[in-house]
Image (cartoon, rainbow, N blue to C red; front, side, top):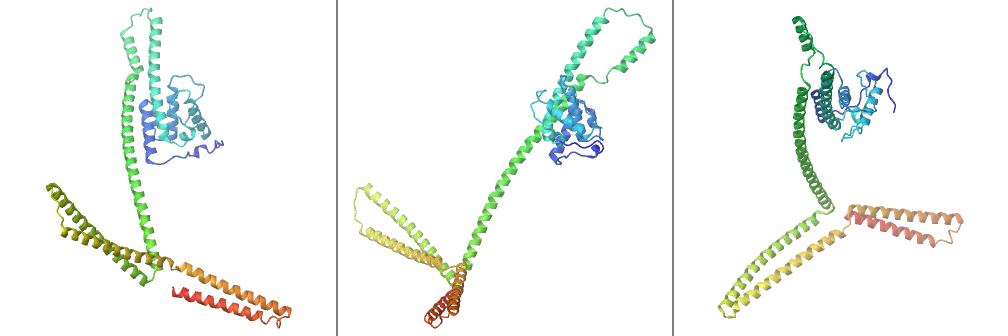
Amino acid sequence: MDYPSTSNAHQIQFEVRDDEEQKQKLEDCIQLLVASGYFRARISGLKPFDKIVGGLVWCISLCNLSLDVDLLYSDNATIKQKIQVTEKIVRVLPQLECPYSLEPHQIQGLDCIHIYPVVQWFVKKAMEGRVARADQQETLISTITDRHLGKVSKPKASPAAVVSRFIFEEEKKPRSSPSKEVKTAKDELQQLEERIRAAQEESVLLDKELNDEVAQAEIIQRNLKGLELEKQRRDQLKENLSESELEEIRRLVEEMEVVRADEKTTKHEMRDKIQQVEDRIERINLVGQIVADEDLIREWEHSEAALQQERQLTGEATRKLMECQRQLDSTPSGNEMAQYQQRFIELYNQSNFYFDTLKNEAASSGHIESNDQAVPHSVQHSDRCAGIHREGIDRSEQY
């Protein structure tokens, strides 16, 4: 890895991702460090990288553990030294049994989305280490005081000395106790965790809504593409068909629709009549009488004949429609006619080439008189190819 020189170290900036989520996570990290007692993070002149790395080193120093890594961080250090500190921080994480993993490039690039859990864990660890260290110091001071000062008789001091000592001790007292500071930091940390939890829940809901909208948009896009393809297919079909063929197809389609409507109506009427006949048969069976109703039989036969006639008409219309469809399919398209014309031209040119070649060979060999019969034969062949070519062109122009 190449590091920049010391002369231009302060002019080089790390690449930082610039988006709203990263900014919010960076602000949360700084607030956590300030709440835990790292008040240098409040200095506006420091860069975010210096605040984050300095806070991590400060938290590691409060963990009250023995490490085999020399962590010394300075705001005036070179880029190379700062990168070395980030690599040492990453190397210390497994020794501290941190449940989160982190890479040096994530610290250098201020990937606060991945840095924030590590900072949160370090702050908790630092608070625990601070409380444990305060308890150890209090126990040690009590032991030393009882050992060395408990047996010493205190001489009676003058009032002026008592007042001076009281003022001196008051000046030495800390303004706030460690327990109060730890409690304040824990309260602020809990508030930050609640805010983060609410933001994460809101982010999950927004992601779900976004995914639903994207899926709906994809469905609409697919439907739109299908409609466009169908429109292009119909437009191409209209361009390939003549006006008379289109009118014939429209007429056949209208007839087909009329026949289908008549068939549907007839089937509905037949079902109603069948239901009436079945109801009547049931009534006759319930009464126990068997009556031969000739009118009903004739009506049934008439309805059956009408239904058969409608089916026959429907079949004829269907056959006409299929015949028109076959005619449309057998009609060559414009592209095919262009290919036919191109092929005719190629055959015509090839025949002329063969004829010219044969004629030149005959002239060069001096056998023109002996090959008088072959030359007219070639001329006839060329004329026949030209006639085929003209016939193909006339047919293509007709289509």
